[in-house]
Length: 199
Image (cartoon, helix red, strand yellow):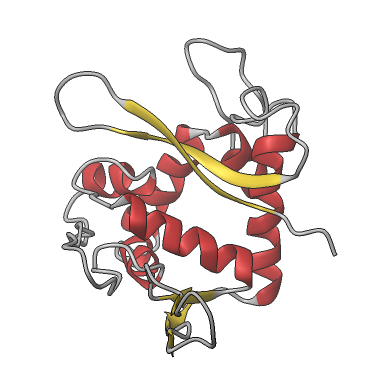
């Protein structure tokens, strides 16, 4: 696939990792279009998004949360928009943070928790909240590794969309830039990611 925009020269053929690294909308538009029109798999992107926890509450307690929205596309335009997270797609920052944590930890979606333990000033913990798995990402290990490498390319490759903004940090970061739009006014740029542990 190729990536062109009005502000840059054509980039030539790209791999999936390079498409993610460059945040190349045409690359993913084509995937959405092909799945919907040519392969009769128009709900694949919506199904994968839901498997990543998008479009449903995370299960966090103590605070109210919205479910967001992942609909099955009913037209080519819906499918193309959904392929880049636009159109009717609605996600919360907590949902994105939860699936990013799952990518980082090897594939487990955990219920977010606000409290780790309750403990007196002196003495042992009175109550410890253990992590609770909500599910597992539907990715084979080799595909998860490819995705993790692509998210690292976003921040470390000179053509990555976050390389300039995250330069000079004393630790490695992997992640993805994105744009949130409300349908009116200016869009909002955001970044979701994780740091890499030294092993």
